[in-house]
Length: 145
Image 1: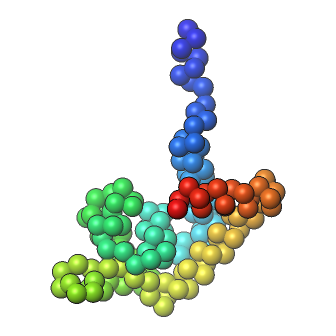
Image 2: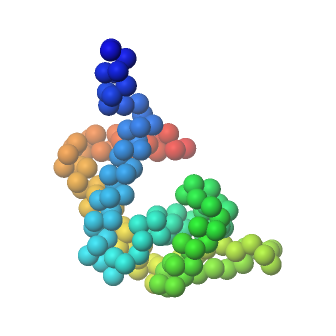
Image 3: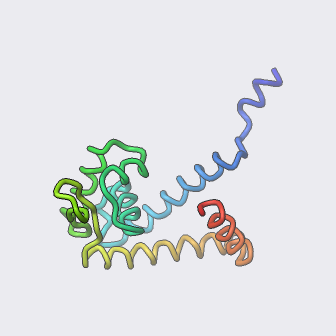
């Protein structure tokens, strides 16, 4: 009986908490994107765009980062190309490998993304305070590096 109760207890391990937070941040970001010119973009495509915005990437790298197939990553990038925020260029020295890069319209989308991010960070600041927000940023930066 005791084991049964424990198996239903909330999981407070770091991995689970980070995953839960990531899901909540994605949902909040999608809610905020609803009032923008990019509201029609699929949530998965918005995540693809975010990765490309951080630095140009090939399909294999995108697929790996998103944990999806290369074909699914390609379809996502093609939808972003269709709305004009991303373009495909050949990778340097390659006639086969393509790299997704942000277009001028994509730069405008990045500005919208920065406003969404600022709103989310302000929500977090309101909940945990400035000092804890900066500590969280520092700790996450350390873990990522």
